[in-house]
Amino acid sequence: MKTKKKTIPCFILKQSLHREWIKSVDDRGQTYYYLRDGSKSQWSLPEVNRFPRFCRLHDIFFSLDIHRSSFRLNCEIVSGSRWLHVKTVQLGSSQDDGVQNLEKAGILNKTKVCENGKKVRKNWTQTWTVLHGGVLTFHKDPKSAPTGATNQIVPEVAVDLRGATISWASKEKSSKKNVLELKGKNGMEFLVQYDTESIINDWYKVLVDTIRQLVSPSIKIKASEYQYLLPSRPSVTSSTSTSAADTDPKKVRTKLMKFLLKRPTLQSVKEKGYIRDNVFGCHLDTLCALEKSTVPSFVEKCIRAVEKRGLDIDGLYRVSGNLAVIQKLRFKADHEELDLEDGQWEDVHVITGALKLFFRELPEPLFPFSHFHKFIGAIKIPDYNTKLSHIIELVQSLPPSNHDTMKLLFGHLNRLIKYGENNRMTAQNVAIVFGPTLLRPEMESSNLAMHMIYQNQIVEFILREYELIFNSS
Image 1 (cartoon, rainbow, N blue to C red):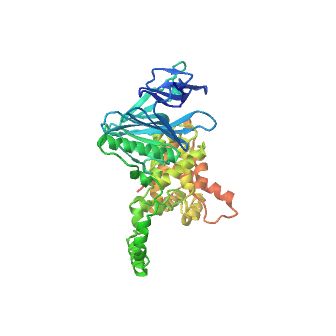
Image 2: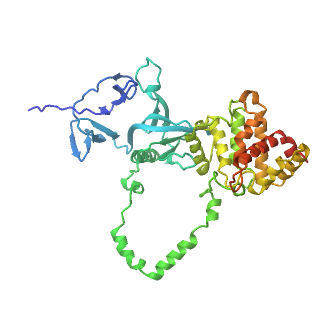
Image 3: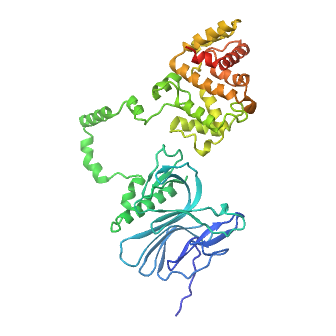
């Protein structure tokens, strides 16, 4: 008696271990299916005969055995339909070679960070990622293909996992969460990321398993090796055996004292770079002392980046940058090593806005509180030469960090106003922008409007007499 054969429609199907259909969506939102090798695509998924061995449903997952080959699909049922979403596929040859080809496919975010041993600029893109036969392949998004091209996903780059390493990326590598660092033996390095923690953990486990089996095919990796990824459960036997020893007050006190004595001091932790003081909102002299310089590195980086992109850009320091991106740059500067050559800081007005924000948030402005009224008094002097002499003396009396930072900043602004015909930033316009930021009294008074006039006049005067003030003997 013959039994009627049923069919199983799936998102990903392998027939006789040779043909694999993958579901995708075109730019018009219409679903289509294509073979993994890109040789064929069609609008509907072909239905195939049910596999001849068995199908055992357990919760929302099932396993299949096909003939003598080990073939396991990790699937979940889509609610309200007959469709199965294949999460991972693992298969091995029928011969006892001891090596498994771990297969997995899905959408990930990736960026190349190193090629042939040289660092490259990060450019995060979403990519269809396929792990097959010990090779991790990143595919181009079909939406980026030219109009009229066939709906085929084209491989962009393939990474041979033999000899490769995979690890969790540090915060210095990327500020994103759930980032993996993949290093190939050919000098290529990638960062791979996905927001859902469970999905990126699955990728990490499969990649680690694949790499280890490629190194030592005879070694079978057990699930217990991944227990560090999961919450650990206390052992009943260990707790009962050690409970008597741990309850002794003297031993507890001794262990606690040893632990406290081993703790590093806050200063040593800061020196090793585990804890960083914020760049924004930090006192100028404190920040310079930590960096062992007289000018904050953030100020130097910003000025260097602005001048590299050109001082003839219209509205430098007058046009506001995107506030959200400025805050993102601020967070990056406070917590990580900042690279202003990164593509996300391509808008020069974001960098100028961040530099103005840095000086605005100094607890004590660049012109110290102790010198504020002295500069106000000097700018009021009617005789020009006497006024210049007093300003020079005041600038030279500033603390080293204030003096050197002011010299660098005003030198940059002095070069900026030389391009005034193009950027429309005259000495007076620059003074209006920076006056209230660089000078302010310790206690606000009723003479706010008058102080603002003098603040602008001081900045404009120093800009016009920059060479005499900072380069005179």
